[in-house]
Picture 1 (spheres, rainbow, N blue to C red):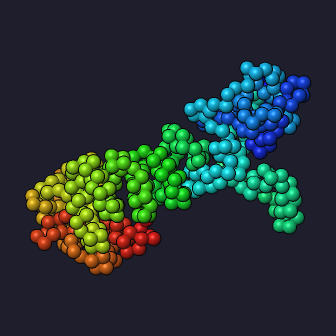
Picture 2: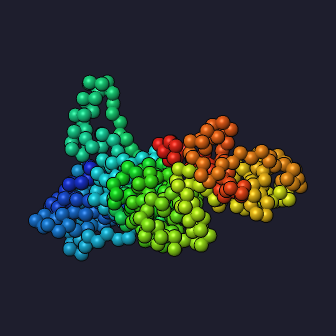
Picture 3: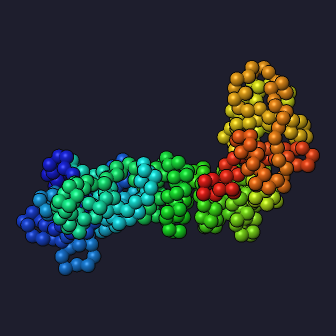
Length: 420
């Protein structure tokens, strides 16, 4: 039969759990142990009631369409055995209590990990939907039957009414059920976070949930997040992947970040990943691995822009437009000869304000401040402080540019707590 509900009624999962299920004559059949909901819509639709029949230890599943809610009980018209289904949870469905209550979720709007104390449901006509998760103290007190007493205490002692702390479901990503993390909705919601926020969330989780969340991300989001994550956790996350999976993610990272990470891995693991990486990227990373991490060669990235002095400003802007996604640095364009000797530098602002037909040789500043491959981090920091640069080029003993140190890369070594 179709449920006979009053429209637009809000209720909490805790107000349904353990309630009686009776037949139309009022004879008790069992008690509610959980609700089943489908994730196929923005607000999950309750599709079934899991209940424990009287004198049985095995739960049964009853279609939500077969019940109505009357006061504190759920009523089903017919207790016929064919209406009692096997408790099989399908793809894209979840048990609300089992999967969410007392579990960690990510609030993708507030970018933090929270614990679910109750679930807020909306009953409209014949349907029931999950609309919010309750992460507040009031939700916890409601579940243990102390909500009214707590409200009176706060009003008497603090002259304050404690409100519910509800988060809309559209901002929620569960972390407890592995099958949820394989859904596209997980990638979509988590990918909306800034990589630094997502890295903070991953660092808050235990080692098992870290891996589950990280492996649910698409390759690009995983790489961006990994760059913002503590180096020790980076290593643990990559060690849980096979070389092919790890190489796909590391190839999306900047060469300098990739080199730092591979340098922290066991040698055999790093070697296996390098074999799976694209040859050009692998060669760039190997070159960076040769240099000590706290010297210029270990701090630099090889992903920068350089062009010949004969190129025009228009050609340079088009080059940057095409390559920007693959570059770690676009603030400066370095001018080099055929053998990569550093001749000059041009800022992006100068390129944007210059005449498209003008030559780089006429616009470049030949007074380039650079450092050698063996320069120490303290001297490099002094140069950044003195000149206010966003990046400093690194040259070998013959004056050929080998890479560029960005201020962020330096900061990660000089002040790790600020650089990540």
